[in-house]
Length: 219
Image 1 (cartoon, rainbow, N blue to C red):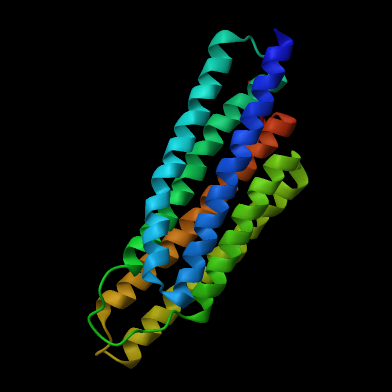
Image 2: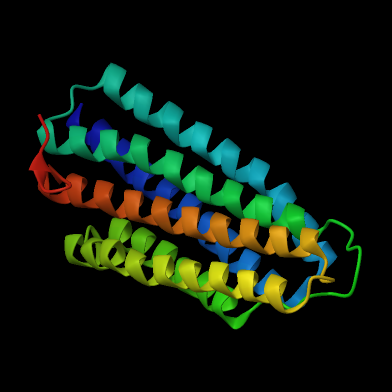
């Protein structure tokens, strides 16, 4: 029975690595779209969201089978329960990336307003957080997970700068396309949310490794 359970744990880990790779690529592509605005890439990113949804359901189903059929010990139970939490945040990162792609496929009603460097920087830092959160899961590295959590302050600071930049653009030229500026703000918010989800993933990695969630031991 234990051999079967260990095989299922290995399968779960493999599936999580696959899903993690998918969301890493999704959020990285969303950031690259800020520069390229490539419509084919944006459409492909939107289509890919359904594949990630399907992977989430597969992992969820595997976790439920393991809980119902096996009798996992405390550490294994932590891994399974934290995985169920993590895949929700992973799927939401994919949703944010798809939402960014959706905005970038909408027709413009004026001259293109370049995305500010702070927003491009924010996109890169968010992608880095997602990458490291997944890496922390793969390596079962609580220290790396802690670094991801701390790095959220960087993205929050950049988000504040982006908002200030948009206000400055509005004040200096009232003829600028207000919808583009609103879309810019929404894109920044989607990256900020993705960073928050990366933090959530990292917190559940800490729990899976140590049994501590946000510094407290869960029963």
